[in-house]
Image (cartoon, rainbow, N blue to C red; front, side, top):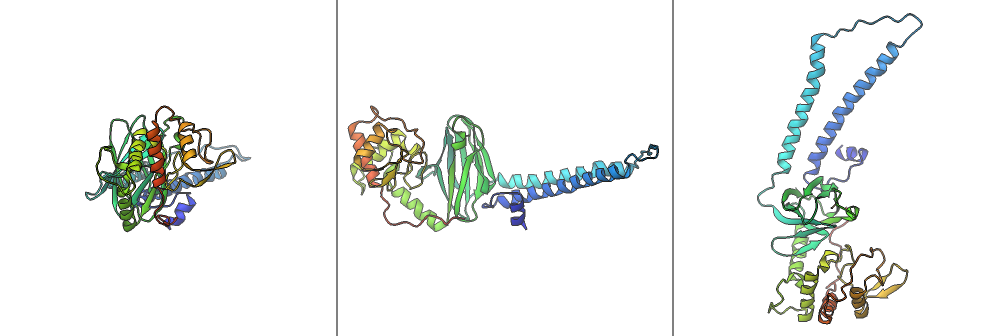
Length: 339
Ligand code: CUA
């Protein structure tokens, strides 16, 4: 029934625990307004036919409604408004009260991307991984202007305000990839300010998280003595990348963002916007840092700034080593099947 209604009304799939509640409210309001609208339309039609001007001289009909009828005209709509209000308030309170055991995720909007960070570790640009069947609390803020975090499949929308945190929670009900949009006009690339929620089964989420924590990307301290399996230069590259803001556009988990993901990039043959292709070797990676617009990978906007003069030769080498180290360790199945 609900699925049929969703299809009739062109609604996206309902993939969170909140979605059926929002949809139920939506169907109820649409249903009642439809009944009332049809009633008014049919009455109008009836009057049009019944009291049309005929051959006979028009006679003024006596207009007088009994009090009970007037009371009903005011009272029945009022009762429906109150009912809408009561049901809506119930859902509102539910939607705004995160369960205590919710997993916290920090969401930061900035022109023009979404960043996600877990309190204990990995941060991501453009992709939010969550476990299914687990409440997730989002703490949303903005670095610059007002954005709005919008996940249609979850019926979730919340403004991201600079200098303030807004809160929202949800529970994904089945694995899948769900698009995120910015729903507040925020500048030139507003329409491209997209992201994705990847909902994974709890076990798959845990292993994803363990893999992320094992990556050297989020080492913030350059002087860390800890020996990484990937070698010191690659680890230094991770630090340089974090500092230079590379992760604002490049991910390391294989998902494309503003630029190509670095996972498995090294050594790959990349198609170029010009129609040629290029192997992502040391020469190409270096060139793309110094003169990024010379060879833009097909499907990406030519927006990368030049890092000429901003990176030392050592830092370029460290970045290349880091990108080299980002190879998929085993052939990985896609994290979640398409819904
Ligand atoms: Cu951010 Cu529109």
